[in-house]
Length: 185
Length: 414
Image (cartoon, rainbow over the protein chains, first blue to last red):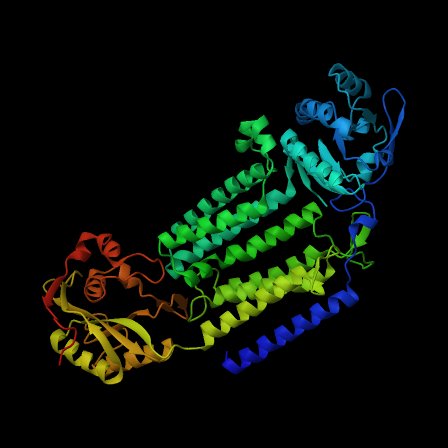
């Protein structure tokens, strides 16, 4: 390739890029995620109302202003059962500051009695919710258990952790962050 | 979109799998290209591995430094295998520093190393796009198009599909240009890498327009700014590497002869001196012809350091003209009145159109490396960064059987 040809091509590429960049805010302005609902970082957490095994209704929106962990689990899931005991002490420690855990059982893919037996046998102090027709699982586009959805006090999803990635240390770090930020305001 | 692939009881995170597969394929292609280009694939790969491990470790330490409470509660958290608890910035910084130190210590040259890594760059980019696609990150703007994907409660631009199609075109160009990783395809090092980088920067700048979540800096999207800066930088690099020529390039050439060798080497040196400035010249070395039926016959060789302002192809043609003037018949390997081979051409490392620089003979033949070491003891191989003494010590014994005939004291002769 000749030097001149290259300069012409390079100039053309630069010009096209600059034009495209300049047109982007006009034709493709960004859309803030927070205005719509989805189980993904930056979006409003999709709201739901489910019942506890005792039949008490629990609505996610009621916890507005508090950090919430929605933990989707099943009784046949060994990773879930390895993770949940770690959640209990953190719940005990942070619940007075407003932290809530909603342990949503994927009842549509589980046996309700087995799930309830396990959960009550462990004496967890956070509430267990039943998702008998899988509505929340679909709403949260859930593909694997456990799935941990961390929701900030503003109702925005801050992190979705699939599988065993969620651990006590990370949850604690997140809570310290969220609660300090809230106090600062 | 499909964050988990189910293999019976095994649930594998698709994003990580796609990323690892692409990086593996990229590394494999780099490993194919390295020996063809003459660069040291193993050293490069080891440096990358060290940087990767250091990056992971630093990312974990960085996270724990920011959240010391975790460490107080459970000191074993530092070696926990969970993929979270990583501080990306800290990890990338540490990885980059370790990579620089590793490459610096081995004296790896910048541009040839980057050329070698160009397939890893393309496939790493494709892998990152695939991972985003699988995770639903960097999701597109809502759009009702026949090819929209349903994601996060809306029909959206499939941004990563656009990027992957364009990256596939760039990758096909790379495969054609390198003849399936057999050459770099240019007469200058760094051009291949710079074109790849420019291509990826352009793809990023173009596809970022369709991403929904934009961070604006100075009126424009920050990722597009980054793309623009990298694009401009790579275009400037291509111009400098491919189209500007230093006024004087230092080149080492090897002279050899087995027909009236002493006479041909002296006259050949004079013919070279008539056209180029000779900076230094080695003594003459004698090697016995080891081929069957040639025992007792000898080759004489020497190395010259000369200066030229010609581009490589023209320089090569000039030397071939001198060879022919001494009666050299192309293809005749029995009778060689005068052989002139370019050993190095500045710091260029390339393989293109049947030509390779530096000459592979440097690491293969004592009659080349020994005279080279005589006139430039500090020589390092432009492609691998290896010192000439180390190159010589790795030669097989038969290649060390080279005898120096005559000393040149002051580096010049009449």
